[in-house]
Image (tube, rainbow, N blue to C red; front, side, top):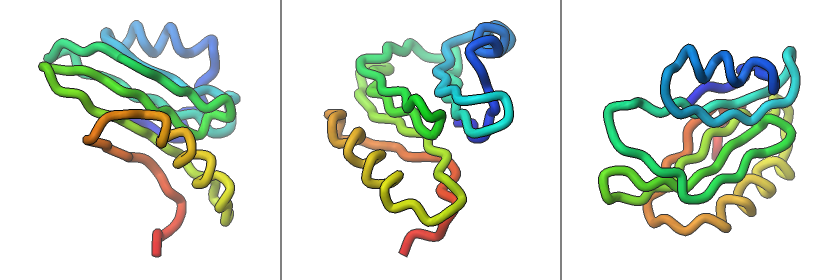
Length: 112
């Protein structure tokens, strides 16, 4: 999981080709935000459901790998206090169904 990628629609195909396997991008601009999930090619993977934040701040996906289901989320939170961001993120996360959830990323804060 990568954060602050500064990726654009133009860089996605190039980066995917360099990686050589599946990659999911949430793009915003070449100088702000952007997240990515890169998958390894050592296991069979199917993406069942996907949400890509249009502001380049998070990706949430349900995957099926080796007969197991998992929800993956990668976030790059704003670096100012933004409760609305986390409410939006968890609202979208509630639309995903897997019992096992992995959330990674840069929270830009200490959760209390």
